[in-house]
Amino acid sequence: MTDVQRSLVILGAAGDLTRRLLLPGVGQLVASDRGEVLEVIGADQEDWTDEVWRERVRAAFAAGGASGERVDEVVRRARWVRADATSSADMAKTLAACHGVPALYFALPPRVAAASCAALRSVPLPAGTVLALEKPFGADYEGARELNRLLQTLLPEQQVQRVDHFLGKSTVLNLLGLRFANRIFERSWNADDVERVEITYDEALGLEDRAGYYDKAGALVDMIQSHLLQVLGLVAMEPPSSLDAEDLRGNMAQALRACRLRPGTLGRRARYTAGTIDGRPLPSYADEHGVDPARGTEMLAELELVVDNWRWASVPFVLRSGKAVGRARKDVVVQFKHVPHLPTGLTGHPRASRLVISLEPDRLELDVVLNGKHDPFELEDISFAADFHPPDLSAYGEVLHGILTGDPLLSVSGDVAEECWRIVTPALDAWRRDEVPLEEYAAGSSGPPSWGR
Ligand code: BG6
Image 1 (cartoon, rainbow, N blue to C red):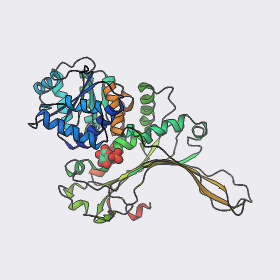
Image 2 (tube, rainbow, N blue to C red; image 1 turned 135 degrees about the horizontal axis):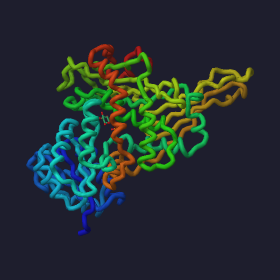
Image 3 (cartoon, rainbow, N blue to C red; image 1 turned 90 degrees about the horizontal axis):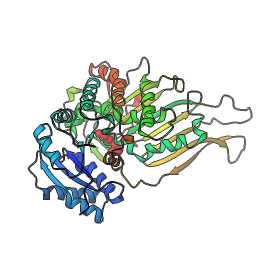
Image 4 (cartoon, rainbow, N blue to C red; image 1 turned 60 degrees about the horizontal axis):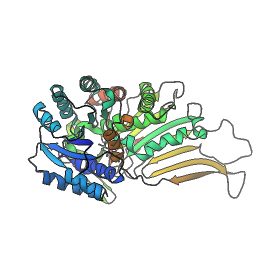
């Protein structure tokens, strides 16, 4: 048997995230032969045997479409450790079970993950150990700062990866090629030419039995504080000189440091009432199993932000994400300004050009204005579109590749994790004090009618 190089230890291995997203991502990575020789150790409080765990790993690999000799070998090597992730003794026992350099993946709620990191203080970590923490990183700005301080006492920043799977999405990564490998866009990528940027991730999914997590998090923390602000960082950053983790993440951090709520705004929030989506009836959010309606948790959140620097001065960046939305949009729209002057003699009411980077399906669309088919002086809106090939790896596969090779490029740096909390905190606090009305929309609609989308 080949010597194991990396041991991926999943803490919280009996949970849903492990089964649905992490293991399928690992399987794809193994099948693509891009990683190192790997063993997958599951750790959790369940009294499982190695065989029970191997069966879970086998099923999840198959669900992710992975097969072949390499995949079977990783299944055969998989092992189970019964452990309480918040106990130092159990963490020491789990690390001792590793044959390769450990990558500890905390697939745990934020407070348990923080307690688990605290438990590692008295446990010697083998050279090269990587710690990978799921979002949300901390439960608020102070929590994120505290967790960063704790992590600094355990390992150098390069060995800490704060996971945001949106950074592994192929379309999100396409932003890099689109912006920095084409002269035509970068020249107009600024407040002189751009009217407005919209980053939207609306989903048809409802609560899907996630009340335990979602009713405390809400759409603002679940989607905007993490995923959509990372996308904003890539859209707004200055061109990096290389795709070295320090260059790329440093430029994203700089853009996010300049980002704040548009003065005078505190965002909008709403939750869904009963409705139908794709023929499926959905109860009102307040009646969903496990929800405490008194919490007033939003399922749709929208913030209007600005990036206070020369390049983006006064351009609104509107970030929005909602659940149970009909005709759901998942895209980045860069809306350009109208031309300063249209020659008299050209007729029609053309829209200004816009670029739509669709995050699902993977597609790029450039809407421009051209002369009409019948009358050459009558303008028409035309769309150029290109579909991208589906990527070999899922977003989780891509970020796991970084974790298992110790490359933090596609993970969130410590300062950015804190910045993202800083940006949303004024809205979050106002929402919690009920200073912003909690509006309603019917499940399956496109949001509250007054929002006008
Ligand atoms: C997760 C959120 O991180 O991202 C979910 O917790 C959301 O609420 C999901 O549905 C969206 O990402 P994807 O890649 O599954 O579309």
